[in-house]
Length: 420
Image (cartoon, rainbow, N blue to C red; front, side, top):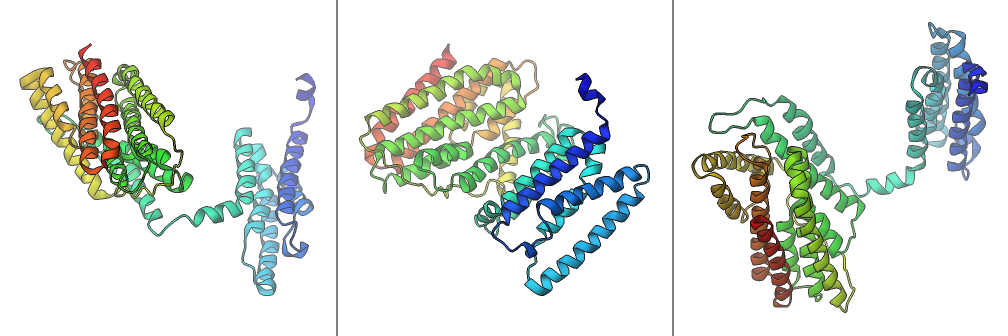
């Protein structure tokens, strides 16, 4: 360390600029190794010299940066002439090499003025982005016309509408703010959107099990209905049943994530119970797979739900959230914990997310955490019951026995968890 401290800072920074510039130039050389040399502004030597050029002009006038700006202007002019002739002579419009030369010229002020992690981050990003040309091209083919509209909707919901909403309770009957209601919408939409992106861009050709896992992160009920209908086309009853149980296991993970976001105390109490349910689901799937004589896991096209970011969906969710907020407050005031348990049993036939999110955000100290946990477990068990009914109605007879056994085990485990 003593030897290192004796090395002049300017020397260290010069070596860093030369190293980064050389590596960027070598990457350009490797990327265009099969092209004519004249088709590029420069590769290893030219890019390295551009970095050194920027360093010299920066240290000559570090206070005013007059020479550095003048050199940047000259470099930009040369790059402009090169780009004009590139278009005129070769009819090529790519700007990558021009932009890389300008970034390399700016490395010196970055090294001097920014922390090391920022310089390294920019350098690594340059290498990755330039190297990923073909990968990005292939990735862009997966986008349809509505993809950026969907992203814009998510930004509107999470980044524009949410910060503008008031924090004060809506009324004495609805002891929750508009901000809390919309925050719940954002949380659920984020999980759904993440699942949607994984399915479309990361695992587009996933098999039934993986599709069920991703679909369960979105909506276990919707995924169950789709798989039940698919059982009429799919010969492998074990695979369909495993997919339905996998989607249900993801329901517990989704609820845990929401609990962790909105009520860490409830999440910690729920964790051992839901981990138990997840393990039971996994064990049931493993037993089914062991007994299965086939391993054909065809790709499943999960066109399972409407877009999770549709404003109509968000509006319905918000209305349900407000409704359950009023209903829960009335029941707690008149019937106590028993009334909440009864509501939990009933709401399982609907979307349980608005209800349990309302439970997670209750601030009344008389409403004990264990009561919220019990109500959440009851709601999830009730939802499992309705999913079992959906499957029995919509599915083929060959899957019904395993479905009844699987969901019955989960429901009994839920009842046992509440009773003890």
